[in-house]
Length: 373
Image 1 (tube, one colour):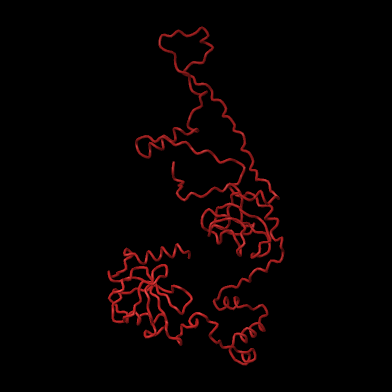
Image 2: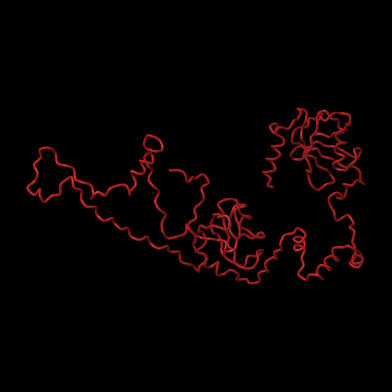
């Protein structure tokens, strides 16, 4: 957790709008101890009407120092001493503490548990050590249980035993990869696949239909009237009649009467659609960097940022570094502290080349709707 997140959490807990019932005389102060390496080890609520003796008793169960060996100091944010709480009979509010200041505990007992780091340094505590011979003499140990299982089944593992006891089929793990060029062909031949990666351009969006009055039926009639299959060709429409009293030309007998429609012209044949052409495979890994991609499973969209092998901290073989559009990754583009590519935390990931499809994969708009006209 970052420091800014800790400060926001503290502000939320201390806020009076969190629903916590806090009296007006209650304050929250950090507590530090002279025998501990950490400067602030907890935040405790205190009441201003508590006596100094009651404060020491409350702190005794948290830091291990006896109340008679405590010397309390009130310090500000920079560590400056504001007051020394020397009178056990006085109330805490007498020394004017405020929200966020520190109550420092000075342990005056040289034999205290907190002296010399006994509450923090586990190396000072003697551990129980048993020799291999004494352990082998014991019965019902895990070592003897494992030896008996391996004698009955040379391929026995603890994971296999768990699956047997749960009644589920055991799937052995894949063999460890020992080839440094593992998936080289997939890495060098990453190409566009799928319905969005074809060479045919997408169809243009349909023009909005004008809706007429009369409810849904009128809308269907309007759509049917604008349908190309319902419209008559212009060549098949009869010419308009001449105005009344207008003399016909001399060659009227050669003209077709208005009442007789022209024969329909044969429908124009559309050229066949262009064949689907997949992008050519490339052997240059640098050309793949920056391309849009989709990662299986789940159609996770992102951008290719790295293709290669020899990454210290990952298994052998080729890997593809992905910068996701959403926080679906597991890292920030680094492995074991070594920077491979730049990505925000949670947006970077390394996947095998067979899980990556490169092509025209735009960013998914969560607010887009297919029902819009």
